[in-house]
Length: 473
Image (cartoon, rainbow, N blue to C red; front, side):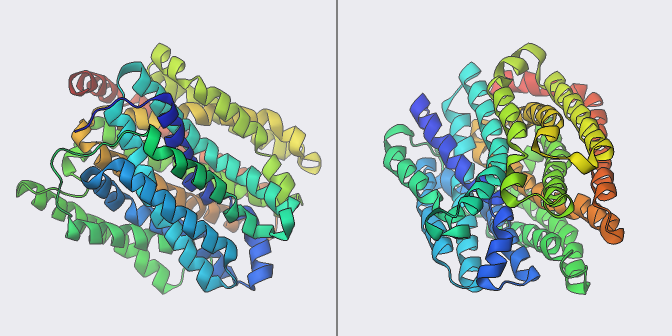
């Protein structure tokens, strides 16, 4: 394995590559009204425009990781950026819904080639404090991108630059992709596994089926009022997941190379990282869905103003993220995670008070105190996610570990709007946005409490992770 050290310039290129696909999860949300008017898209088509990107991304992540391990992570990173750029151009030029759906799927595949290579490269080329700092930046950029997408999307739609309207949310990717392509080969070292691993065809198909059935059901369920095809897909998910687990265990026992090695799920840090992803990232996407809808449809803000309402959250998120390495070194991963939960939960309570007592006067400025606190808490939580999940993953499993965590993260992002969004929609039946958003925020607070209790009960996990990390790194 090539263990050439990654320099700062290479780290910046990798983080720029991470920013692009992450932004495209949320930037499209604020452009949906404009797309509907321009392309005459139905509600189901709009849901698919949002969902198909995440579905293609999640389904192809593990395969993208395996290809990077075998053929070179820099090579796959560059190939993914090329595909993402071409797909973004096709999105910007699309003149009908079918073309846009195809382009969004290609974007998702490109993103799935890019993202696993970033974390795996960091894991195998850096050590000690540089490794911890890079992982902190990786987690911070990933979360910040979600906020940037909301703000940037609102700005681009409002500005209507050169009359491109919603198309600009895709065309903005092109200059960034070009810059990455011009610098990646020079600054990013090539790394790969010493022994190429065969493709796990059965595992790939089962993972694609399980992830796809879950995310399609979550995307279309609310739109189709949970008709029987959506419920059937939802029931298929656990069945395919169980079969995937059995298939991977059997392949591991035969000495093969499973796509998602069961040995990873035996690591305490990986199991905790997965539970953290399910609880936190589903809350996060549900929060963004409910609050953004409340600001636009309930309070009457424009897309631009609604996006700007998250600026304070994004600013504190970024400031705390860049300081997260020092905080983790001083407090440890477990206490940093607990501190982040307490801060975020305090911000949620303040936001609930803002909506409850000041509903008639809610604006960008009255939201700043609560959203700023929430952003700081979220940054501390995200900063621990990859640090905990990858803590005792051997370097030979870096790609598989990265893909496992990223796949669960993306599935959790899809679960949030369904879980918290269903509660929000149910409360809206009486047309009361205030009560709907308050109930949703209360549910998120309770889920964060579950994460706190899970963390308090997992002290041995963190001790074991630290000991294993010292012996494997």
